[in-house]
Length: 379
Image (cartoon, rainbow, N blue to C red; front, side, top):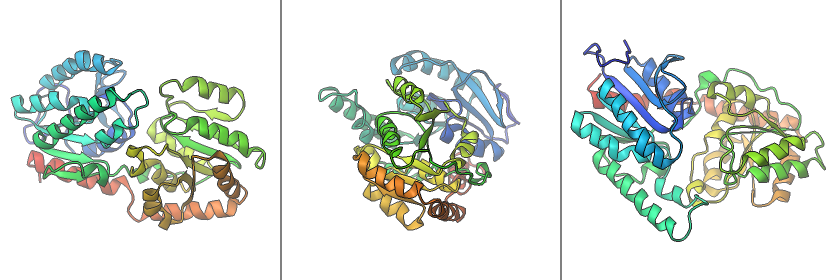
């Protein structure tokens, strides 16, 4: 039985997942990993920025106050998280933010608690994609990233990596890969494509080609008059005005930040799903979760033509790749797709068939549960 007090049945290990950065309905943290552990019968708590404490769809949530920027998260958010941990007294603590590594390892050492670092991205490579860093601050941030990764590698009891590339940065003997594949149980609605509809669901930023997608729709209307773009996600640094202008121009239908369990319905309405990224080091070998989600929704994708992505996805026959440094080239690819709905439907079926064969978080959850059981000594 779960409880927010320090008292619990001794036979049920208490597991806490902690984030001071992610929002309370983050897809990986809340909708996937937390749900899997809560369903597995652990005395589980998700400690995260949220509106209130409570049971959220079967996941016990302990709410942290929203604390803004990194400095405030460290100065205010981490002491608050420490107090919550002191009350909960977990046997295993899994953290989802690099900035929590020193605090979590200290907590674990002082309180005989196992600590796992969930590495969502290649932290060192991620520094290269930060546009606000310059030639003076970037080397300093790279050094800090290497120090944090090294600290987790040596000090954590286990590492959960989102991709094989991320896992390659660790030598910890308990490093496992838990891919961000879709929860198939969420993808029950069949495809219902709206003609000319392009969809992108995720953070909205220039690194994720926000302005490019809008320019693309503007150009597409010369050959596909009904072309339009549905966006679902949060606008990052300086992007909200760009979205507002595109909405006013009639190019974009903006849905805001959609809960993960409602995203599949948005995706199912697409004729084509988009995943465009700038060719930055941290993206070139990333594992694009959105492509798997489009496939699960039975929707064909159009994606940036990165060699690693072609190697991973071309064999599924579930979408097309385009040079997303060129609006004209990408527009030609999308025009061919939008003008051939039968081919789009075929690619959508091929993608769903590939996901059904094992590209699901239901399968990945077993890896996470195995590591958790090993660390808390539970069969």
